[in-house]
Image 1 (cartoon, rainbow, N blue to C red):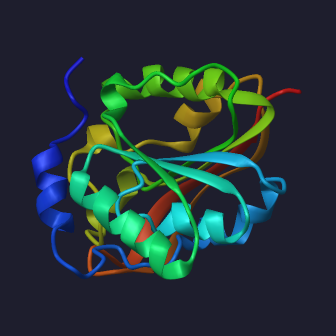
Image 2 (cartoon, rainbow, N blue to C red):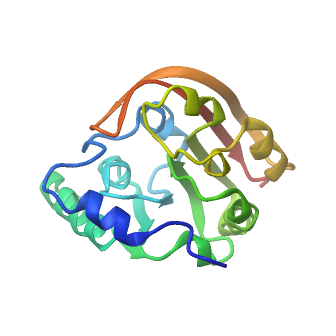
Length: 205
């Protein structure tokens, strides 16, 4: 399998001192973070510069970011230190990543957009990696975002749908599944009226 995206591109985006998507957590994650139990072990996919993993750690969770950008890792660890928390940060390519079975209380995917051909394998890995009762939480741009142009990939193959998620996580308890248009203010790259898919599902206990 080919890498899901170009690490050089993301290292270039993250190499400045400013945080490309801001240093505050994603609104959807902030709103629903209480779904993860006290001291839960949570993996954040495509973590970038650390804003979501650091937020989870500030809530007392054991957070690990996963990304293949060394610059993202550097800034994530810097942000964690500035906020007085500790996170783990693993450098790996989602296109080649296999989670150990049954080790995560939660998996988070916030604006992580692997190509369509890689998503079935990734979702199978998430399903395997979650403990019984574990929760998968996702916010992603969907295909309607292409007409808005306020952030996200320009390739439709990197944009998913509620129906795809519901099919991939069939057998889970689907707690929330919706497409909506909302205003996003996350740094200079996610800015304005946006079309997103939001999804939360719990693995059977």
